[in-house]
Amino acid sequence: MLRILIADDHAFIRKGLVQILTDEFMSIYVEEAEDTQALLELAFKQPWDLIISDISMPGGGGLEALGIIKEKLPGQLVLILSIYPEDQYALRVMLAGAAGYLNKDAAPEDLVVAVKRVLSGEKYITPPVAEQMHQEEQRNK
Image 1 (cartoon, one colour):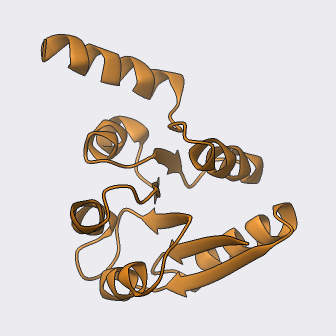
Image 2 (cartoon, one colour):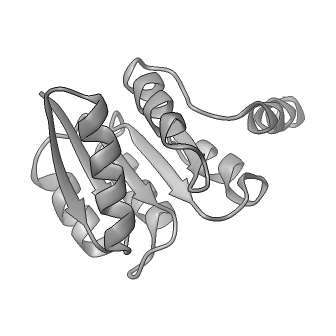
């Protein structure tokens, strides 16, 4: 059974994500967190195949939670969602250890593609973010 934790401070976003995922995946268990504190409590309470988190939530947000989660559970897969343009945050969250970055204005099928790609061990980023990451790696050499 696929186990996914969804964190977003807007209930309608969480419900939409749950609906998209349950429509796509036959055997799925989903829990929801409405803020950073709830996300962290649930993240460490039981194992998750994937955590999907909004970047901006009360209590610190997904980026802060990502750092804490990756420190305690380095192998945990985390997909970050955001309303902000990817050029503002995508590179930052990927360098912080996220498995992917998806803008909330993406199509529902993009969420499914992102989840499948991340669960298969790949990163989910758009080509412009991939280019930014490549440029960053070249600067750090």
